[in-house]
Amino acid sequence: ALPNQTFTYQWDGRDIYGRQVQGKRAANIRLRYVYDGAYMQPNSASTSTGASIVMNSAFGRTSDAVIEGSRTRQQIWLARTFRITLGAWLAVGQGLGGWSLDAHHVYDVNGKTLYQGDGSRRSVEAVDYVVTTVAGVGLEGFAGDGESALRARLNAPNDVAIATDGAIYVSDTLNCRIRRVDAAGIITTMAGTGACAYGGDGGLAVAAQLNKQQAIALAPDGALYIADLLNHRIRRIGPDGI
Image 1: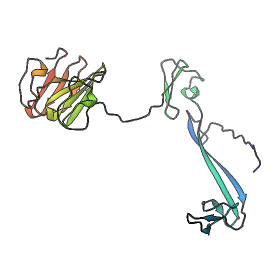
Image 2 (image 1 turned 90 degrees about the vertical axis):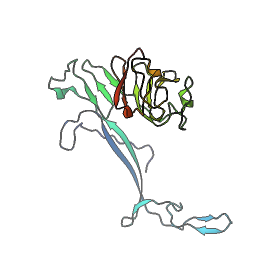
Image 3 (image 1 turned 60 degrees about the vertical axis):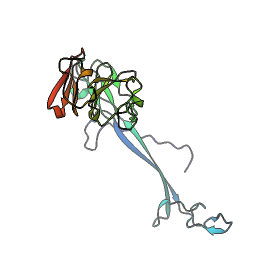
Image 4 (image 1 turned 120 degrees about the vertical axis):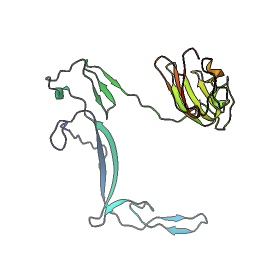
């Protein structure tokens, strides 16, 4: 192949059926070089003991690599595939002569771009989905209140709820407690004494008793609802802690 060759392919923006394509689309570009076969003695190689061995194949005096080719045509192929995106969102599909309405927005799934009706656009930033631990050391038990949640012990946590201030509420089931991890990462008990029983209605939640509670849910007013499993009750903790 000659060096620095170029080729320009112009896409008309239509699919195989001639329809106008909306939004970005993936394109696979495969670049393949075709060489005439060259037959020659394969290279020899030395082993760790110093012995000389003959490799199994040769193309331009390379060794054991597997290379595509056609024995009938006596050709060798070397190829590389590139994946790119093409296209953009076009307003003509709305039937308004290419104009858009400021209240109508379109999301391009492939391009991860929201095209707003006023002509502006917003893109979804790439997010690395990395799993991290926010509470617990991986050992069952109860410990760590007032410290970093990463050093705390939980016992069969069953459910979580996220508050608007970023706090995480944890149903610490076998500890018969509701734990809270604040935005700074400090864990505390906000309901339950640790005695698996029933008691405490009308008083502070930290002095109440729960019994193997499971699901929890936060209401818009900040109240926390608890499925108190073995007490066969739904308990409520108001924003005032009662």
